[in-house]
Amino acid sequence: MYKTKPLTLFVVAAFFVTALAVSLMASTYTAYSATHGGMHGKISMTAPPGAPHEKVSKLVQLPDYLPGIGTLYVDPKTLPVGPFLGYNHEGKLVNITYMVPVEDLESHKTFTNLGASVAGLRLDHTELQYNPGHPGGEKPHYHITEWLISEPAEKAM
Image (cartoon, rainbow, N blue to C red; front, side, top):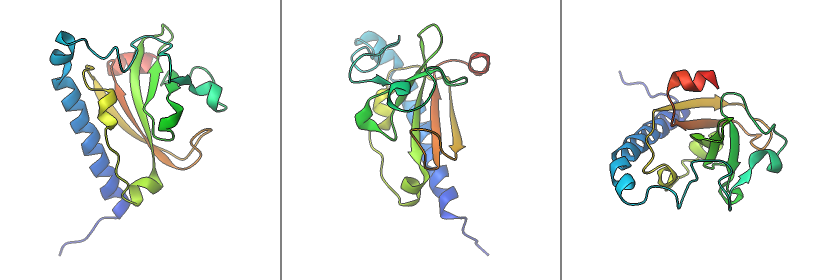
């Protein structure tokens, strides 16, 4: 007999598959980007990224540097989902994170063009983590993090 899984698990799984597809798509575009000007018009590879991005610690009560994710910048118009740009201590872009509210997943909200910000960047790996809430994202949500560095380099942060 066929049993259905809870809707939340299905939606999260579907979103994870979409994020993975975006990762693969972005890797495919790396060669094209390298020969056609790269991402410099969309994302700065070094901090600070400039307008319209603002340091997250200036928008909400968070430290400038978050261990394990870096110094975050976001275009305030894209809140709460982002993308959030994470830079390491040397000011190098190391990740791009989306913070997707659980209630939006459960209500089947459509998110379009999330991958547009990562197209052309070489992604190393993707993580999906549940977060019960924090300053600036008080509601339960998922962090979908596209890492541009290796897992050992990420752990060293």
